[in-house]
Image (cartoon, rainbow over all chains, first blue to last red; front, side, top):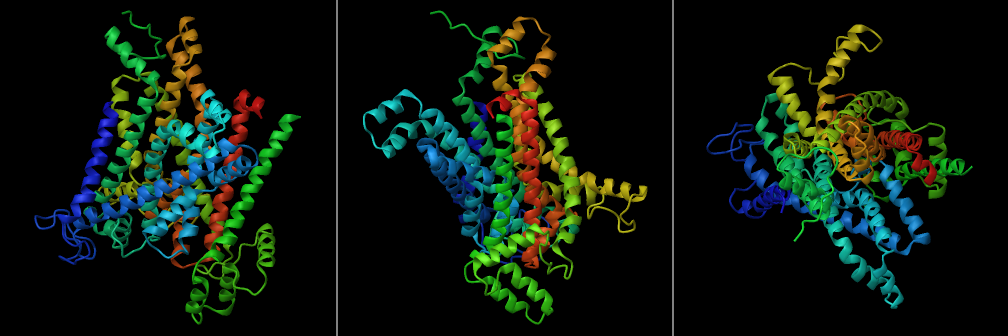
Amino acid sequence: MSRTLRLGLTLVGAIVLLAVVGPALVGDPDALVARPLEPPSAAHWLGTTGQGQDVLAQLVWGARTTLRVSVLAGAAMVGLGALVGVAGGYLRGGADRVGSLLTQLFLVLPGLPLMVVVAAWLPPGPSTIAVVLALTGWAWNARVLRAATLALRERDFVRAAELAGEPGWRVVALELGPHLLPLLGAALVGATVYALGAQVGLEFLGLGDLDAVTWGTSLYWASNDAALLTGSWWTFVPTGVLVALTGSGLTLIQMGLDELAHPRLRAVREAEARTGRRWTGVTPVLERPRD
Amino acid sequence: MSTLVAVLRRAGFYLLALWAAVTVNFVVPRLMPGDPATALVGRLQGKLDAAALEALRTSFGLSDAPWWRQYLDYLGAVARGDLGVSIAFFPAPVTEVVGGALAWTVLLAGTATLLSFVIGSALGVLVAWRRSGRLDAWLPPLLVLLGAFPYFWLAMLAVHVLGFELGWFPVRHAYDASVSPGWTWAFLASAVRHAVLPALTLVVATVGSWTLGMRSVALGVLGEPWLDHAHARGLPPSRIAWAYVARNALLPQLAGFGMALGYVLGGALLTEVVFAWPGTGHLMLQAVRAQDQALLQGLFLAVSVGVIGANALVDGLTAWLDPRVRRAA
């Protein structure tokens, strides 16, 4: 396992742990426990919000909601993308033309403004955010998965399964599926990162459920309660840092998986081990070691 | 001949995209459950005058005409450049309100995106070339971390530290209240001073994705056999790096440029909200708060037209730069 992958897994693991175990260790995030905008102290490690709630409690409970919505929305994006992309790539013909056209259309329509237009009139709440994200963010996954499916379906083992009379769904599920799995995994990680950012952004604009405790609404309230004007950095700095740590942890996992999938990237490391010096420039062509 | 067909086909696609953007505007407010539009109109009754209420009704499609009639009317109105009347800025027409904001957004997001693309791509080649050096050990993870911060959060931090604590930059709006917009030195200087912080935030937030994208494409290019050949021919390394690797890795980056634009724009809109920058993002927030549907539709349309146009431009540029694209088309 590479250093990148290990670092990413550690980061994400720690934050997931916080979201799962944390809420049992902190108090009620909605309770008004002290005066508004108190700086960090022994009683309230991260100070209080503009309403007098404990920032740490909000952060920990917010992790749970925010991560759940991100993963759900990410999975929905990949699911919808896989449906359009794999079906199009495998069936080709008319279905593919319609699917590709839709994919390209959604790719050029600006994502966040589209989300705002849709979210502005739906009843606010985490599930609305997940639906909006899935509807507006699937296209990139569809494009990647379609390309992979197109390349795979020309391979001999797919042809053999088809000639043996396997029905289409079995070819897709049992022949293409295992080969698409690493790609689906990477897509899920990428989509979760995207969903996290977009969700926090939408909620920051006030389009989430303002009574819910999430990272995005925390930032919305921080900005509404004039955190910047009063210099109350503790109401928004920790939240942003956690968002960034989650996002970068997931991205590092994705990059680490990439390295596993592309052995050519490892040739440099091997060349360095053999020659004992740092490698710059063109990727080396290595002679197979003699036994 | 086939080139002409390909160009026409692309043009047709972009027309279709425009039509889709217009149709989204028409369909979304009519799909909402529980008819929030009627409720809103009812709530505002008495608060707004009759003309504003009528404008609101039209933008929600609260009319007795059949939907296809309304749709044709809407398409006709958009084609004539009539986007209705804004509620938040009543009685200003939406086109006027959006037009002023669009210029500010293009200025901010355009400059920041270009800077970020150039700096990021150059860094990407450098990092890929020295891929086991010290630079590659710490720069990519750092950029991943920076890119993971929400744009608007970086903006908040910049406002807090560089604006309030250190007082180096103005933190609100795009120019001082004491100068009036115009081609005067005082105004331009004020505008530039106001633009530094938001533009810096955007460059910091986006430069990483260009660097990492370029790095990964360049790493792929570095493994190509024709580079082994160039190396064997004894070409100087700097020539291989910039004239061979960078040039080839730039093309996929450029194709990504059009698509990234929509994403960057989304981030820019949020950044504008933090700085109260008088662009489309700030306006969008005002439209949402005032439930100004006509303005929201107008903004979405304007931003869509911008992104679609930029995509078309990038398409043309790619075809011009890459003979393979032309031949495949």
